[in-house]
Image (tube, rainbow, N blue to C red):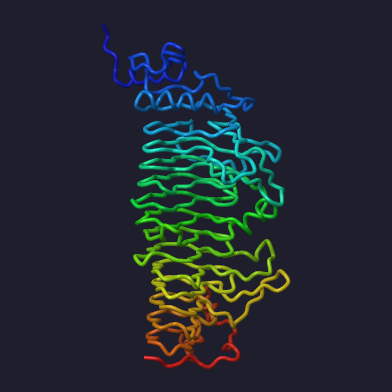
Length: 493
């Protein structure tokens, strides 16, 4: 007998599993028996669900999930189809839902204006929970449960509505080691809630949550959030009603109490706040945030409070462009630290650009550090919907607490730092400025300002700048006069 190769054997087994035949996928009274003919991988089609979005699939899916739990764990395979859900699901411990996608898809530009919802791959169409954001989440994952490779869409959401329809969270991760992988959340009201879960993994999740993208609280062992991007994949225009509402009310990421969260390569576009850090009854956040970004947000980062161990934010890119399209009258701030802040927040090698009124407003009595950062495009004020530069706008307004600003570049020929009377300690040193150094101090605290380098203003250097075509020389040639009604920067040790 000719031997069968290992690869051929695997292909045969997977072919039998995905075929959905009765011989390999027992149902009914034999479904809970562990036999060689009762595998730990089942095809959802064996449970009689429809794939055209015309019938509720909740009961069939929950039966398949419970069958796998009875077999001490397993995988429910979900072939291409549109699966309607009028209710909610719980993925039991050690059970997984696996769709067709091995990476989160994108439907931007992939559908005509009247075609909804997507009809390729494994698509979950959610109708349950309409009107009640506090209802049970669509899918709850328990310990070591996983959902992978599906698209979730809410067909009753309307792009031109003044306010989107509230729904509960699409996914709630609970207990220990749940995972959400390779999923697109096309247009949920609330996206992912990882609260009360330890060591969770959320990876390769993209989409456009309209109200809250991801919420984290009561996490006492390290969670991981990686490659989670919120972009307008559902909206056709930045002026549609639902997107305008999102820009006014939405928050990309909210972090309450988390103990050493690891957050890598995340992004939020078009929210009122990109990242919000809060204190709940459980506490406040600390963690490692690497390569995070926010664009087209009124406030890219808003810190109400953190733990004293602090936020370590590295290689961040934070952008405000509120005025560009919506012509609002509010003047945005990229980084806003609230009066309630008592913790620690460190930003290293981050870029902040606008156009915006101010780069940062810092209050409270914690410590904010900005090291090796780049600041550009501040000093823009909105008048009747148009941007107008205002020299009197400071890049950073430190109103209270303690600040360290070291080794940064201020790329505009405008005032850089204002230190208010309630700032008790500050170190502003080793910064590069396009134009003259303008740092104003009103505090009697321990304030150190030194070794900051403005552009040379000798006749020889001015002549050199005239012949250079780079951006920095252009900034240096720009007309400028000191802000009105303020004294020159104080000479402080």
